[in-house]
Amino acid sequence: MACTCVVGLQWGDEAKGKIVDLLTDQHDIVIRFNGGANAGHTVVQAGKTFKFSLLPTGVLKPHLTSVIANGVVVYPPRFLEEVNNLRAAGISIADNLLVSDHAHVIFPYHLEEERLNEQGSSQAIGTTGRGIGPCYQDKVGRGCGVRLGELLYPDHLRTRLHAIVPRKNQLLRALDSGARGFDPDTLCDEYLGHAEKMRPHITDTTRLLLQAIKNGKRALFEAAQGSLLDVDHGTYPYVTSSNSTTAGVWSGSGVPARNLNRVVGVIKAYTTRVGRGPFPTELNDGKDGIGERIRQTGREYGTVTGRPRRCGWFDAVAVRYSAAVSGADELAVMLLDVLSVAKEISICTSYEWRNRRLEDFPSDAFILDECRPIYETLPGWETDLTHCRRLADLPPAARRYVERLSQLLDLPVSIISVGPDREQTVFC
Ligand code: IMP
Image (cartoon, rainbow, N blue to C red; front, side):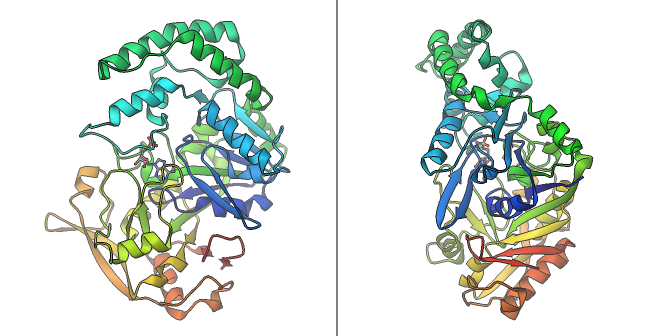
């Protein structure tokens, strides 16, 4: 057994892509098990920046097998676009990239449904607009869900779309009387075209993974989004529609969780969030404030949507909870270099709620929304860290900050990242 899971412990964008990339050398297979093209992974390799939203980070290493497992929702045009972009950059993509025949398919009506649900609604989540929620809704609702394997059977697909698309058109018109409708035959032809191109990659990935693990292959699971966006364990309803904690590994890949013997919890040295939802440590301190300086220095804009990310101090209450839910064994602390902009650095160690002190993360978003952070403040270091390669290279204040995080979370820190490049890494 040598399976690892890399999981974000905040609200996503913890720079998991870099950690996955660093760990790929110790593994044979890299697997995505949740989410879809809502994720944003950035990997810098040999000075080139690669951005993915759907493909596993492993595809940059053609000697590895990269798997999009059953728990992912796949938008075929995006899959093909990312594959074509990589090929254009000289990266070989062949049978090293596999996608589950059980993965559910995103259709344009999902994107439209999401757009109509989100626009102008007081209940909007602030989604990425990639059709993720409506596709998972159809999966769980069963009547309208289509799996990738079905795209390989033209007659079957046409029959299904003739049953599904009129229902979808009705729904869209109920949401907005002027909504556009879709034609089942046009959609069917379009998706059969995508399926032909995807055919070499589509397979029963569960069987493949179970066999590979039995044969001693080392699997690396990369969670998309962050644990606090998990549909069951996150800040519901301001979450994504899948299990983005390690809980998603089993259902989303078919690999029993007992095979995981290493869970790397990835945290930013501060906190960010995109979309709506409670965020107790958010810094709304104006254009010259520390929140904005973190955003600028950390280039905190969404990989997928380009939206400015909300920025704030590290929240140890939230991460203590998410680390426990995800079963983190160790921590990778990312973007420590960004905090060089701060004279003093605060860490939220508990909350105040209705004149009470809370040590535990509340289980309801509306309660979290009323929580005020209680901070402890540490001195900053105000020097560039991007050249540091060993623990001893870090200034004492930076080391103290990392040690304090480790203490508060009761977990060892194994990796500290001080820049986007592979080399800008301190192994502890
Ligand atoms: P959805 O996943 O597009 O349905 O969006 C639901 C919520 O999750 C929104 O707040 C999004 O901003 C957030 N979200 C989805 N994917 C990511 C991600 O990869 N990083 C950070 N936030 C994400």
